[in-house]
Image 1 (cartoon, one colour):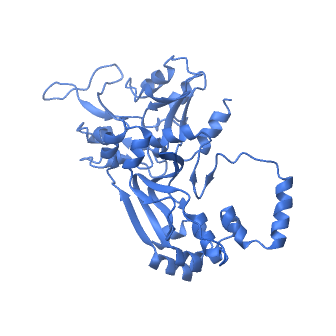
Image 2 (tube, rainbow, N blue to C red; image 1 turned 60 degrees about the horizontal axis):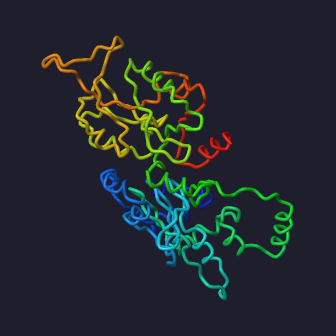
Image 3 (cartoon, one colour; image 1 turned 120 degrees about the horizontal axis):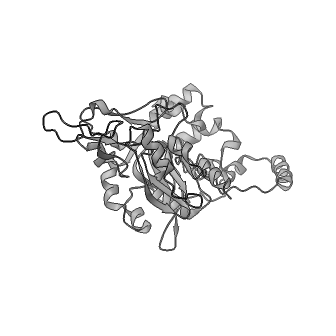
Length: 371
């Protein structure tokens, strides 16, 4: 636990003695299931308003915070009540913090001011592990070592002197207004478009470290991307140009090399594994028995059982039965090529990209270059 705590940016200046006390009082809390893909298969067709109700509640809007929550693994959905439903405002991944504004404000507030409640709810998206630091421990062991600039504005104001406020007011007047709608903070990952954020979380695309996106405004349906993929893999393309779409973006059914690769659970031969350095999930064809366990486990249906062919187009056949052999196939990010994914390199219109959706910045920057 101390190792996990030391990795958290908010705690980087906490001395060892305080860190030991924090570890003694911190609890690891788990929500959802590791095999969340089974639940997702049942709920993926539900409207967003109903899907969010199936997600385990970690903390509720309007409640008084008793713990500072830090995501250890998995994903969480931050939402606010909106009419009769909920509106997603951000999603949280490893290292993100929930409840910091309310917890810090309450620890620093003057006796004559009212305590602050949670302004958002937090739900587990599939599976979520959090480190829960009691508010008393945070106030005594963490807060004294946190810089004012690391605190949310409302809490930081409690630490300001009158001189600080005057200087900040002058700086604010001189500062050019900047767009703050899309940023990665300790409070989560946000997108400029609320609709796009809802779409990404509802379809669990926030799990993608290498999603394949196609800009439908530029794509001419030439299929050069599929042809390039087939040429690299002995005539066996590892994806088809289809998938769910939002506005001009198509999220293609190609392996996304997920942050939480549930496809790896249950493989009887260990033929599917992740490269620790690159994060790429690979299938070792030589020991794959074609059982289909990984294909059934993938919640995005991005792994297929297919007959495997040699470079001359001849199917590999079982020596005893003479029938074609099926193997699990999926995108491997063209690991054998130093230039990277052939699909993106082959697109003549710069319509295709492999992109990390666990953060908002790569996608929003890519979209901005297209406007």
